[in-house]
Length: 395
Ligand code: GTP
Ligand code: MG
Image 1: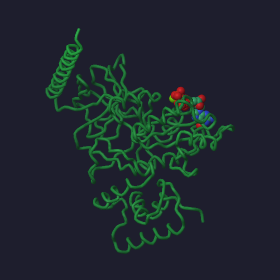
Image 2 (image 1 turned 60 degrees about the vertical axis):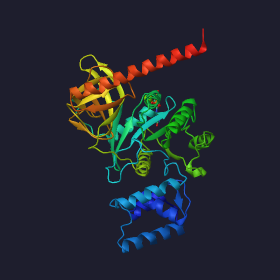
Image 3 (image 1 turned 30 degrees about the vertical axis):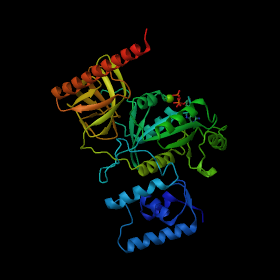
């Protein structure tokens, strides 16, 4: 019998992955990630445990697991040594997400060396996974899109290289939950691959390596895997804990697997946000359209945006005149993990700018007035400090 992967067993038994990892922890079983394989005796033990639990009616932690059980498995997860299983990262928005809060779709960024196939991979996913709708909206190009997979919604950010990602992060916003590092199978690790890995590691988000272009005759997946170890990413089948998925953006081979791994990783991250909470978002990109005006792509992180809402970015505000989703369709509202193109800013915001909302124009002006005061005060203080320094240094 071939070995069974943890997530496969979880799926077969109808147990969620958190619960499965907690059971393995209780048994003292070592594993690297949910895609690690299990020995046959462990599989049998787990099957027995699940059968017992089900017989005694304690649930077994399917999707309907009670909140306290979820909390337990959450606290158990961080003691495991796997990067996919263990994101030692505070949930975006600092405080741990309250159990019971709705889960949200993962936001995935794709990075890698030039020409390794990032855009092609997204195009492939987009073509097959985005319901084609009539583009009647205001959008020409949204730098982010939603893919509907068998495992639910996944949001991809189609950043032009890593600059946008780095800028957004440099501004203190973490917009991505998972990074895909694309490496071409005929080219292997290149300088920008290393950069991309460093960016993902700095952001402290789980990363998945997609070895692309495996359809090429000169593709050498094993060489890429060996080279990955040199950047401290040891593939699972080399005894490490890096998830590596061979794909072809041309034929589509492996793309389903990649989506599956993204969903698994997301599930373990336990991403949640409150659609009814206070709105918070980040500018992904923005441009000025000669006719329409400023078109800004906003990633909704918390709360819900509505047409007619007032948005505050830095010291500017705008009223949402129209919004469109990533298919170009006009929408009236957008909840967490939704990229939307917003029409209504008077000034062009920058990537990474944080977006807040205000009840009305008056409230928006007040928020801005407070920000301007704060900035002036900081500037004054800076000047005073500089003067004191100069005095101290003497003529
Ligand atoms: P930059 O945005 O310039 O960094 O490049 P990129 O990483 O987005 O690569 P892109 O998708 O533009 O692909 C570069 C070239 O590789 C194009 O000619 C693609 O057709 C080709 N390509 C991408 N993926 C595959 C693949 O899976 N197989 C083959 N045979 N060619 C591919
Ligand atoms: Mg590209």
